[in-house]
Image (cartoon, rainbow, N blue to C red):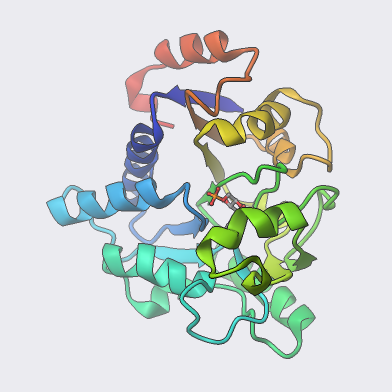
Length: 260
Ligand code: F6R
């Protein structure tokens, strides 16, 4: 995988937004896989600024969710559907029908998971999937020991992830225990994976994912299996990478027109 070290979260957001803009110029109806949480917000803000400035037209872009809480009432502001509508769909000026996600309120959750996997394939597959990383190494909500071949399914959040996400809710008790998440096998079907990690709290997970062995214990290490995976990290999140200097030199020597 390619590792790109940037000075800070803002620079990471701008770099990835430029990759998304380049994709949309090549393929205006590209299917963009979006992650939620705090990390990707600078990406969405930078892309929305490009749309406002007229340097990219996102009108035909399609967006799909990576995961969704199970059991939140419809329209809950922290459901990932609400977050994606608020942070991505509205700022980019996309229509509500350009957006798909798993149904976290479905009575038959298993059927909803299978339907979502099918819908992603029928939509032609994800062109670029954005990812964050959990402090425990999860991608999407594939917690440690998720099958590397897993498909979209229901998962139980670890207590660590519930604590990490409690900042979005009034209390830890309100954080759902269950989620629907694209499986690791599903994620690996996207044509390009772009993971952004920022802050010292992610340094250990990043080092284990990038330089450690491929292991279900660190779900993000599955990116090692993908032919086009890019990991963008700020200096703090890169602080435990043994090969940081090599990654810097490699990226510095890369022709600028290649993009991410
Ligand atoms: C959420 C998701 C998660 C987050 C991860 C990091 O859609 O895919 O894997 O990316 O939990 O969250 P933040 O960015 O809030 O640290």
